[in-house]
Image (tube, rainbow, N blue to C red):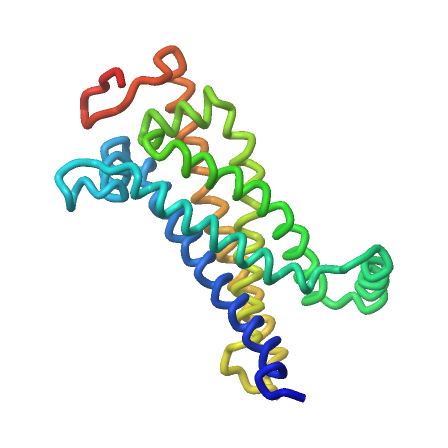
Length: 240
């Protein structure tokens, strides 16, 4: 067998792991930046202007947000494409997988199945969110985001996206740690238990943070519904 060909699957597997890791790091960072609304409207506006380059260039350039969303969307598409090779290819394979899960009752197999299902959902949920940011980069801010979430009814999308994305991310980090981590085989059972505990703690933390942030945006949006479209500029709200 050609040596380069034999290394192909390993390289694809490594690329899938790296793209997944980058996406998880982005998601966690994104959650912290989004949660700036918990510190107040001015804090969230400062973060928005930072991503628009205003602190560096002296004025905001929303196109920078579009570029970032485009890069993440491309990375998401690449990761999904690489992951598809591990999905059941037909109904027969799916039935075999369900039978395997039922008979063995293997926790890691169930986690893998959850990741497959959540990954399929993310392709649509996260894709929709990123497309909105891509085409409406200037529609971000304390009032703009809150109006989109409340008056635009995007809270439905984000309420679905929140548990799905963090379950997928937490399980993904666990699987990456098991696959690439320097854990001795003799104590792998112990490390699996510890990593699953960390997984649960990470999931719970980001669910609490995301829920609190979403609730805050919804509260602001509900109070601002009669002035939807108005933008927040520091301590003074002005019409766009």
